Length: 64
Image (tube, rainbow, N blue to C red):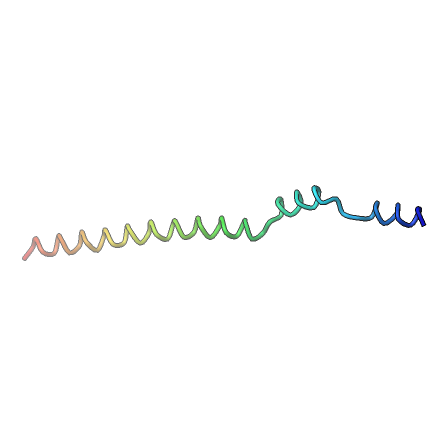
């Protein structure tokens, strides 16, 4: 019986090792970071676009 218990203990996954692997390959975290970067770039693009629209309005109003 002790031999069986020993084999079971040996086969168990080490919790520390498991946490390291999960952290290393945490796809949700990677996707979250990637999404944040894309979102940031999109917001910067929105700001530039709005700036161009405002400049266009300003220049159009100056011609009238």
